[in-house]
Amino acid sequence: MIWVPSHFIDKDLLMKNKNRIIRLQKKALEYRKHLIQLAHSHSFGVHIGGGLSLAEILTTLYFEVANLDSGNPDWKDRDRIILSKGHGNIGLLTILAMKGYFPFSEMQSFNQLESFYSMHADAHILGVEHSAGSLGHGLSVAVGMALAAGLDQKDWNVYCILGDGEIMEGSNWEALMSASHFKLKKLTAIIDRNHLSQEGTTTETMGLEPLVKKIENFGWFVEEVDGHNISELLQVFDAEPIGQPKMIIANTIKGRGVESLANKTKSHFNHLDENQARLALEDIEKELMSLQ
Amino acid sequence: MKSTNPFLGKSSRDAYGMVFYDLAKDNDRIVALTADVPGSVRFNKFRESWPERFFNFGIAEQNMMGAAAGFAREGKLPFVSVYAIFAALRAIEQLRTDIAYPNLPVRICVTHSGISLGPAGPSHHTLEDISILRSIPNMTVIAPADGTSTAMAMSAIQEHPGPVYMRLNRAVEQTAYETISKYSYGKANLLRKGADLTIIAYGASVGNALLAAEKLQEDGIQASVLDMAFIKPIDRNAIIENGSKTGKILTVEEQNIIGGLGSAVAEVIAENNLNAILRRVGIPDEFTLAGPYSELQAYYSIDPKGIVREALNLLDQTS
Image (cartoon, helix red, strand yellow):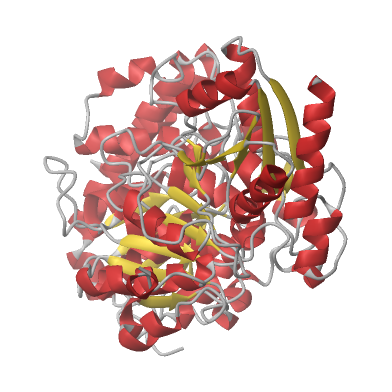
């Protein structure tokens, strides 16, 4: 490994960052609250499980790491973020609304006829860089964007969020190969490693391990973190590998925060009933209190 | 006149390489993407001149096609060139969802189309691309007839804001255009006028149809030949106008008989209540044989002799 994570366990830095981290933790809880409410108000159901596993990843990326301007979504030098696991769209829309790309009220049309606020990420929506839904597409698009940036000697970053089930698609491995071949150091991919695909565990569906080694052997700088730990996420986002793309394997819990769904396959797509939503919101309030 | 046309006698893919190189000189937004076949798709001159704008994705077409979308999203004008089969089938979902859905200006200029890589057999024959591509919204589908018309096709799509699929041949086609004329976007070119039947074709079949029309004339049969280079958007008016004049239409294509030009023409005839009889010539709904290109063309009746035979069948059918 080229990069030495010298500040990885720097306690002083952690203290300095404490306020920053608490602010982000609160944001993540706010995100969770919105998501629970959306999953309750949309009787057809939403991709709640993945939305919840993405909470801290999206919050850290959108509220701290990425260089964005919601008032100027087409700003040329912004960082690009592609949600390749496009079914996490309910989470993406939530974070974009929180960032001010559009008011939450627009999401009332979610899944309705002629609305682009729908089950899968759609670039008709402000702030969405590329439409996604069919798995195994986003990383290739991200590779093309990063190559274009390199050609124009631009300094912006490309972030691509993948699902762990998603990387069963072979096209990802083509993209992984090419990103290291082209030395795309401005490309960071994040795998939301919640260990569950639609109808089973990734272990029983199609074994992915040893995932770190596999991706390292494809020429990437790889770090594995707790995907719900904002402090760990911040540090790994800060790491600057030399001449390599970076992969963050973020271990998460699908459905985290809704006890009846957490780490269960059935969390993939669900409507939350009154009771589920109430309990989850009460837990969030308790967590918020503990941060005061 | 011949000396002024550098594309005469060139294959469509050779002409493509020449025109592409000239375009790239004046437009630094152009990038070239391929998958291990830069020489085959005539990218080598570009590659030597502008290596920084040349991207070889290795034998991984899906990733190449997705990356083309990324380039286009960032303001580049990607030309993606591989063998037709690997763009239109292997990477079709990236083409559809990442390029066509956002209507990105990507030029997918594919070579070795149809059965033009004859001995390579069915794994390398591309006989479904027209039917697939024309059912994808936002796509423009164009198949120039020869080297000269490839240059015309490149001009016709130059300013088009959306994605374009351009179908090119491996071999040198029968000449359809002696001099450089013009394709207008979405319009067919009437290359020959005749009152007895209308032959509609695209790609290599156009030159073959012209030769067939000459043979037919020797027997006193006058055939119109319509170059339907733009399969999408298709020139409905040209079909209606020419079809109603002759009342007999023969479509010829190097594509599976299902879903290609013949089907597109049938749709126009049926929807416009056109009083015309249609005979479709193409590859029947079966997997092709391997063999030399010219022999395969003869085998499937899409060479000049075969087209004459099918034209006579059509005339018999209506007499």
